[in-house]
Image 1 (cartoon, rainbow, N blue to C red):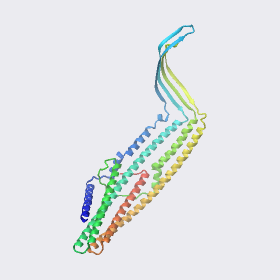
Image 2 (cartoon, one colour):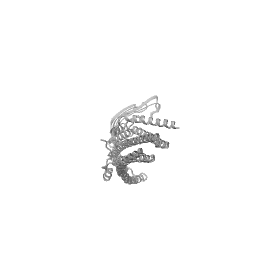
Image 3 (cartoon, rainbow, N blue to C red):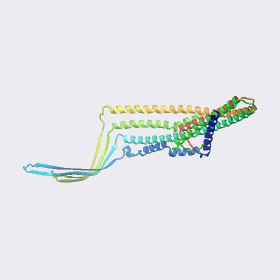
Image 4 (tube, rainbow, N blue to C red):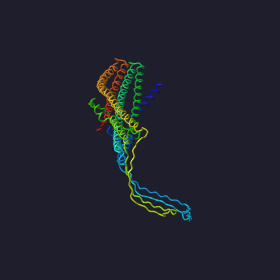
Length: 440
């Protein structure tokens, strides 16, 4: 049984040593490099860029219906007919298998010159949709960058956890060595040695699990960067939290820069434009037509055997909606309700964003307070652990007291790293909400 435990422990140490060496040899990936790679490769950003480009391409006078439409037309109709004609003078004319042909070609123009100002509303709508596309692109970029930053700092936090667990293993090894030395001179029982071995095994297992979580987070970051998921890299070792954020500034910036709030405002504008488009159908629709046409026709059975005509044509068309089953009133009422709904949605969006900001700011401030508190706790627990180990060497305290001091020190480190990450995570989300993430 003891041999199996030792073999298992040796395997764990081998795995840990291999992963530790790999981490040391892996090239450093800075946060700036990670963001630049994501901005270049991320699929969501590319899709948003394409959609934004499409919306921008659609903003033209022709797409709005303001410009005329000019077409080149060609028609060619042919037939073969057998005709028997009896004329007024009694003569009969038989024409067998006669070919009739008629073709015309030319250039035609159709231009709506007045449609109740709907064409101008259409153009305004296209410009608003373009703005919406730009906002969605900015939001996608900010969300992607925020995800990259969050995952990167999560890796830093987990890497610090790995360092803490390695420190715990070193302490457990020291405790095991001391227990073996005491056992060798008869100052400790075999049970104390076994307990020290169990503690070392437990700490080693925790480190293996932490390495697994660290590797999973690496895969997530590689996925965001759209590269080989097994690409190895190392990360920085410091989390710096911006401590200068002010709630009032964040709220004000959100009103001016938050994509959701700005999108809701654009949707209000689109609802108002929709009402203009609906009302436009109350007015006359006026258009002009023009063209130059060539016509050639041959009819052997007719009075005119062939005819060639060419010339300029022009005209004016107009129509007005007099009655359409009261649908005009219904559509205008619904358009007004849509404006009201857009206003309500904008207010709800604003309230949701403000609520999210206030909640995040609470987490941000509490995280800053916890960082200071847990940093002090780390220092205190480190001193307590050093004193405890010295007393254990002298045989003044029990192994359980050493383990308790060790556990307290590890817990204090974990809470300190968690507080750092909590504050940084809240800071990232607050900057994302205000569309102000900036990597220098």
